[in-house]
Image 1 (cartoon, one colour):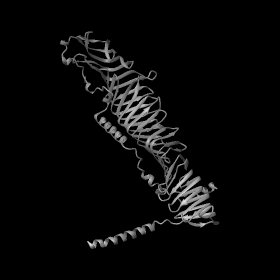
Image 2: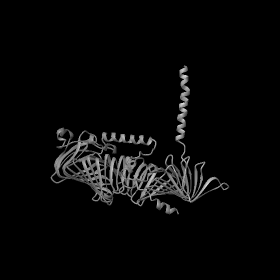
Image 3: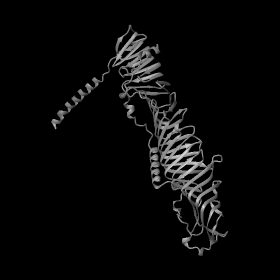
Image 4: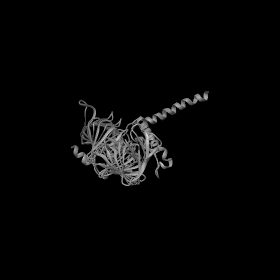
Length: 558
């Protein structure tokens, strides 16, 4: 017990010595007067101050301050400088003003009166500037203008981090470039690289487009950008949205990832997906991952889905291409095929590769299928099916099928619905005839060279047979089951697309649910600044900073 008590005073002594050396090492360095043409004391007007004038030059811990006149309070290690004041820290910072104060104990400077701070990459002009050497930060709370090569920044207040070469603005700031204007309430701007980090509601306006984001990165030198929160790019005729947007102003290329939506205001179309590439100068876009194109036709929306969508051409010459397991839906009409080619100039839509069309209750197949529109009325005009045409529908009350078979089919639309249909060459028909009471009066089975069908509300009203008609109307009991189906009949009712949601596969919907959930999760998270990129942090390692021209700075203040 006594032995342990013996160690207590030694331990206290050790702490005292350690504390003494710690305090000694932090003792502020004194301001050193290196030059002055004249010096004096005036205890009445400026008590306890050494008055210096004429080519005044002082040094403090690596900082050199020059001015016309100064009051040096030696006890306080404090200096007041007047006239053509310049504070220089190595080759990284030059601070010019009409008046300045410097505290050697606190290592802080205050400059006012046409204050100008220059670094190798930027110049700040404002009324009052504060410089804290301990943390190497410059800050101002008066309107300031920063000139950085091609960019001019104006803000109400700001902070400059000397080591990082970063300006930070937490109030309204505007970056003006020859090509665009950036506005934000929270922006970090790296003067050496020209990299900007935006947080909160921010806009980028140019003749080419308008950009909105609440979190993003913009390289003002290379004109490259990345936006990641509530962002969109708006052109005169197009708006691009996505959870993540990449943009290259030089080539007017944009790519969007997750919950992508591209709105075409002129052609009244929308394209959605989870990945898209837009080439503005080429008037083209590529969309994949649950891609769907939505176009307005006759006040009704047509939905086209494929694994890949390509849209090319300017207004009036636009072409939509959809690839791989294409499905489309419109009220009263839907279909499937391997791919689609739709040309707005010719108003021709080609269903390519195993096409099938459902018009009301009618299933139509053939080797080649074309939908033709009218560019004047903006309505569907006609349908053309070539080779191996087959039109089939279920008998409304029975188990049989109404069937029309032939070489080619030509149909005309009326108010968006198939109304007048001609089937020509080697036509065959099996049709269940019913009276007004829906009672079966017989099964019409015959062949002819041509058949005309008139439809009302997508149901056959009348059938007319032309030339070399051979057949009859059979009582149900007289026509066996195996004679009630034409060769190659294949009913695919279970594949019919009955809603806009049916165009997507289970895999598509699983991906969509995942993307929507990720969007919700991200929106719940606090909006924090983007992580600073390696190319920002390492910029000067690849390209050494240039020294500021001190002579030019000094002359502007004389």
